[in-house]
Amino acid sequence: MVEILKKLDSNYIQIKYSKEKYGEEGRDNVIQEAADAGICVEQTVKVTESSTYHLVYDSFLQAGNATTIKVWVRSHMIVPLASALRQKTTSGAFIFNCSHS
Image 1 (cartoon, rainbow, N blue to C red):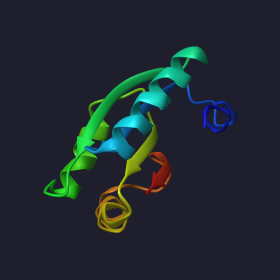
Image 2 (image 1 turned 90 degrees about the horizontal axis):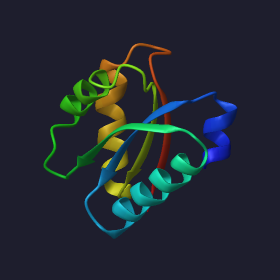
Image 3 (image 1 turned 60 degrees about the vertical axis):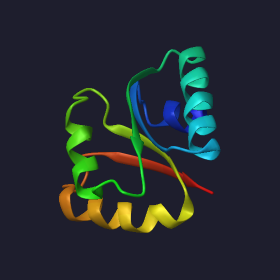
Image 4 (image 1 turned 120 degrees about the horizontal axis):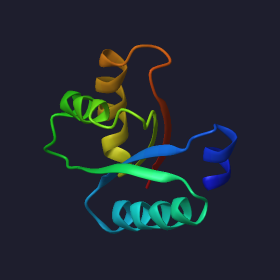
């Protein structure tokens, strides 16, 4: 995972994760691997099934340096989240790297 971030020249990242074992373990692993590689995790945001997905985009803007976003969510959450983000995100504004269970 960190190798992809290095190839993208991502010095700062954000992590969006779902609150369950898969999302939290993914978040923890990325935080550790990023720290070992000298990559700053600028923010982590928990995404729940009741989250208003288009508001998740607003959280991206709070971390101005981190335009690469690692997403660890449950599979049933990825499609509505991606659809909401596609509507709000301008082309090239962010790089998303998603993983789902």
